[in-house]
Length: 68
Figure 1: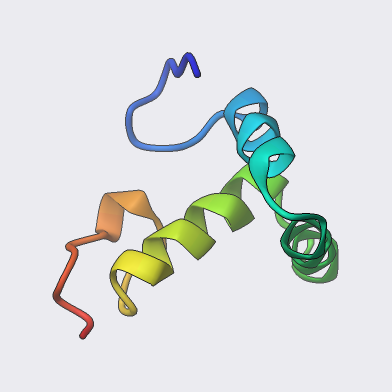
Figure 2: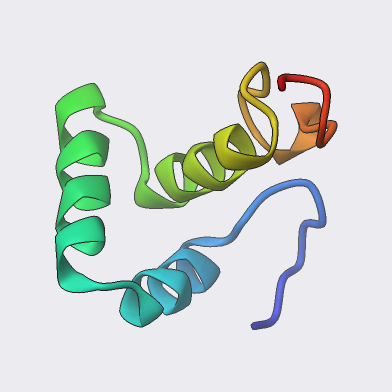
């Protein structure tokens, strides 16, 4: 994966991540992105960040261990 912005996922990076996920998770993330009208890269980033830190909105806010 090649990123140009270290703060956020690019659309290409999000597609790469999605391609590696089980179909049911990929479908759920795409459905969530459509329902809240956010780009898929933002939804993937929020999902990963919330796994690491329940209080994070995105990777820039993520401080692993804080939200546990």
